[in-house]
Each structure stands twice: as C-alpha cells, then as structure tokens.
Length: 77
Length: 461
Image (cartoon, rainbow over all chains, first blue to last red; front, top):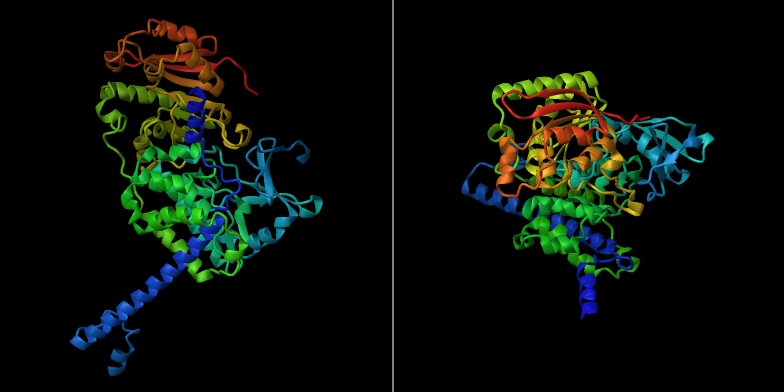
C-alpha cells in the first residue's frame, strides 16, 4: 500500500519531461495557421469595407474613405 | 588581464559566446561562428537603432578580434540582476513588450531574435532593457519566429495566468526554468479564455498543436514558409495582445494603505523618523541599498538621492505594482516582490543559473523599517537568526525595533499566544551585538519604537 502511495505521488507531481518530444513543430504549424487566419481576416475586412462603401454610395451617403483613395468621387469633382 | 577570468555560472547554453568577469567587470566573449550575425547587428544599423531607443544594453568592443579566438565586448553592468518571479505584473508586461518590439525592429533590419527568454531582460535605470547581445541572428526569408514558443512560455503564459487567474501564478516560473508549459497553462486558465481569440490561439490551440505534432519531423514543416509580412503581422498582433492584458492593484491588500491608515505614527513622529533615516543614509552614501519591507516605497524614495542604486523589496504584489508604476519614482529604485521568510533560491543547473538572494549580496546598506516584529512574532524567527541573516547581507543596517508594547505588535499578539519572552529591546541589542556595533540610535517620539544605525563587525574586502 505504501509503495502504491509513493508511486502515485511521483506520477502525480513529476513535471512532464519533454526529452523526446518535439515542441517546436506545433509552434511552427500554429504560426502558419495564425498567419493564414490574419490574411483571411484582412481580406474579409477589405471585402466588407468595399461592400459597405458601395451600398453607401448607392444610398447616396458620403464615403468614409480618405478623399485620395475614393477616386470616382474625385474624378466627378 | 583575461587570464583571471571567471565564467558566469548562468552563461553556458549559448554556443555563440559566454559572459565572464574580471576584477568585478563583466565581459562577453563572442565565438567566431557568430561573427557573421554580430557584424550584421553592428553594421546594419540595428545596434544604433536599439541604442537610440535604449532597448539593448550598450557595450564597448574592448579587444581586437585578431588577438583572441573570438571578440570580447564589455557590456554596461546592470547593478542588480532580478528575475521574473520577483517582478510585479507590469514589470513582466514591460519585459514582454520590449522583447516583441525588439523582434519587430530587428525584422526591419534583416535580423530576428533566436530566443525570447524573460531572463534576457533586466531593469536598469528605471527601464526594462534587453541584455543578451548574442540573441540576434540574420533573418532567413520564409522562416517563422523560432523563439515564438519560448515567448509564449516565458511571457504570455505567466501574464495570462496573472491577469485571468491569480497574480501570484508567476511564481510557477520558479519551478519551470524554461517558462510555464503551455499544456499546464491551458489547464489552469479559466474556461472563458477558450473563446478569447488571443488565449485560444497562443495558449490553448498552441498546447494542442504541440501535442499533435510532437512526433513531427522536418518532413511536415520543410515546405512551409512564412512570409516576412506575415511574420511582422504576427508580432504586431502579439504586441496588441500583450497591451490588452492588465491587472488592477488590489487596494484592499494587507499592506497597500499601511502609511495612510495603519502605521501607528503621528505626523510629527513620522516626520522625525524620516529626518533621522535621511541623515544616516546621507552619511553612509551607499552604492547599493536594499530596502526590505519597502511597502509602496516611501523611505526608498526619501533616501534615493543619497544612494547610487536601491532595490525595494516587499512581499505585497499590490505595493510593488503601485511603486513600479509611480510616475515620480527615481530611476535608481527597482521595486521587487520578495517573501523574506522564503527568499528566491538558487535555481537551474547546479543551483547556479539563477542566483539566490543571498548570492546577490552583500550590499552596503540595508533598511529594515517596520519589519522585525513580522519576522520574530509572525514567523517565529529568533532574534539571533535575524541578526545573523542581516550580518551575511550587509555592512550597515538601519533597523527599527518595535517592542511588544507597541500597538501594532499587540495587534499581532491578539490572535496568537505570546511565546516570545525574549523579544525585548535588551534582547535585541544582545543578540545583534556579536555581529553589529551600534553606531547610533534614536527613540521615535510618541512611540515605543527605536531606530538603530548598526555597523557589521566583520570586515569585508
């Protein structure tokens, strides 16, 4: 019984030993994933912004984009 | 000169070089294998840019590389080396932001940090500063940040645990010398962090992917590239993540309002006490003063102008956080969290990679005000042991003896049996006399307390 408690204690309180485990590959894959996610989020944001602008234009609202970027309006002027 | 060199016990992991000490001065030896990276650091403009921002410890190139199998540089010495388990939340956050900002700047100059250890940051002249000149490597297009995992373990994990669970959890860094494992962090963080984007990605998913790819080899990763732009975006998003983490000072902590609500002094006696201490420290002009039980730094700030450097220790994280963030704090003062009854031990390889508190002494002067009754009565440490402890740490000791009749001590004794018959002024003088001689003493008016200026009887070289 005593031995069982000792073994249980060792198993319960010994920190994980990572000697043969490669922790770097998971971190690498995550960086790739986050980069893709950020790229996707940027693209979606741009699409959303463009669609919002087009709808506003259709409804006759003024563009929120900086003047130098909203070429059609500048050309009209 | 360099024949007397003593290699620092913390400096052995990096194949690029090592630190050594000669006649109290610190030098860094750089091996020829690292020359390529070092030259790029110095010539690309990155070193100058880092110096302009005071982000990297400056160094002199003291030896010609032709005379040695390497270059020797002489970095500016940081007077006191502190460790992340002694920092408050905002200190760890400042160190994390410094590391990320350096990585972001390095990428602009074609370099990248090869490690992101929290031990590469120190507090010097009031600011966090990066101390490892050999951490910079030339960036290779397509490579991810190889220190990303280490950054998450050394900074993000303890900061998120402190912010979302309990501020004391940075103490886990004492157990895990290479940062808090992400699977453990994932287990300890509250459930809501699984739906917060930053913690979900950098901690929970990170821990899962580490497990999933633990047997992965170069086969799976060799064809995958991360563009420089994506890498920069990743660092920027991590800077945002760190900036959003915060921790509020607990104003109801045990010690936070000690001087305003609880200190047992009239204005007059507090004023007298301040004047006496200021006069004694002015006469001593210590190069290094440790203020033990510094609270929110009232007395450290008072004597700062007479000292070259002060380390203000307190057990209460709220006090240390508040003092660290105090806008008028002198840059000479470094506030740190420390439990004197269980001070930082020697850690790492041969217990010598991270030094114990005792190893970082002795110092010129210790200030121990309103402290001794907590050691003797709350923690049952005999006066003889307290005297011996101080004698190993300091040449001069300015200490306040608070006798049993004092109302604060009476408060301590209301909930415990008085088993301290040898806690008297006479006993105090008697127990300290083998180690210290009394240079001066001053009974504080309208109180039972006595201030002592003591000098260690042991001569130090």
